[in-house]
Length: 391
Ligand SMILES: Cc1cc2nc3c(=O)[nH]c(=O)nc-3n(C[C@H](O)[C@H](O)[C@H](O)COP(=O)(O)OP(=O)(O)OC[C@H]3O[C@@H](n4cnc5c(N)ncnc54)[C@H](O)[C@@H]3O)c2cc1C
Image (cartoon, rainbow, N blue to C red; front, side):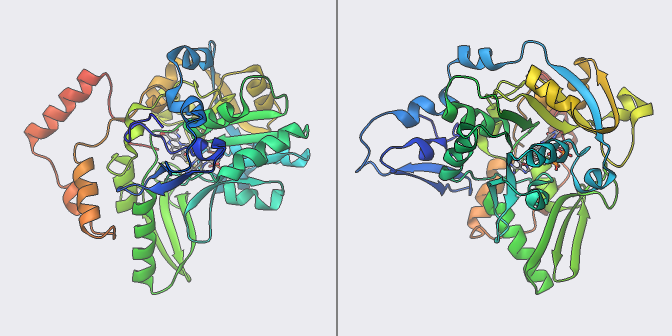
């Protein structure tokens, strides 16, 4: 494997394509999954290195970047879907249609330990498990690549969703060529958070409640879409905090617990090979006040004809095309990687020192001095953009 530790995106493709089965994904010192190769059985076939999406040639990335993307504001016609989803409920709209037609859907679900796994479903009753953003890195089990490809080989429809790097990994697993049944929808992604920090937070909350976590929602709209909450339900006791209050969400949104590779993501601007990107239509107050609401609105960026056709089949409560320029105002994460917080490495050092146990991250949020704030703003300006704070 020729990928530096800080560059690996943790997609797990190398494990899936190793003919010797000598690669395992194991947590690194910050709790992110990274490949570990058992050199004693490696036959140097180089499949892992050649297929790794991080090793793509710039020309390949350029060829995958959509030439003429279109940006849409969209809200699902099903108010229940909108309430249960993160944004405007476009993912469940797309997924329901595929499942109703006998197809399958891939997306991220919690497992029984509240870890997040990329999961394949064929039953509409399970769709709710894939709904809502889980702000923690999801692991892709190696067999999922094969199972998902099998669906396509059988001539069935497949909706494959995930972060841009996960979409790029699946595309590379399939190899070149067209798959008429495949629709890929990436989430607009600013970064993924450490599974170890999330796990420690779940354990900590269950400890406070004296009862295990029974339900978790990162995008609970109880206080509205703009003020979304992280809610953990522990045996009827609800731990509910808006993203501004929740220490976990503050760590995540300020890029203190993000994967290192996310700071130089190679899959921006739809270059993952996705047919569309799904995100939140933030900053509507500024862009189009008449379209603003607090129940949730999606930003859908369509990259291909297939993506456009799939979106056209959805039923909307509201939709409108906007010029691509608004993406820069609403959602810079589509275009740019988000730089890590200046104290990111300090946070992980303190977390490791604490035995990978949750601790009050208060000191990492202490107000910086005026000079430090100005310096940070200057460097951000130099880097070419304001730091995105929202997921
Ligand atoms: C880690 C992460 C970061 C994000 N960052 C941004 C951002 O910066 N700006 C923005 O506008 N939108 C971001 N989003 C996307 C946004 O939160 C919604 O997921 C998206 O708008 C789809 O919402 P929906 O209402 O259509 O349906 P939902 O039902 O909310 O759709 C959820 C979708 O997200 C996928 N998903 C959930 N968790 C994960 C995960 N851990 N890994 C991979 N896929 C996952 C599901 O498979 C499904 O496709 C992010 C999502 C994730 C998971």
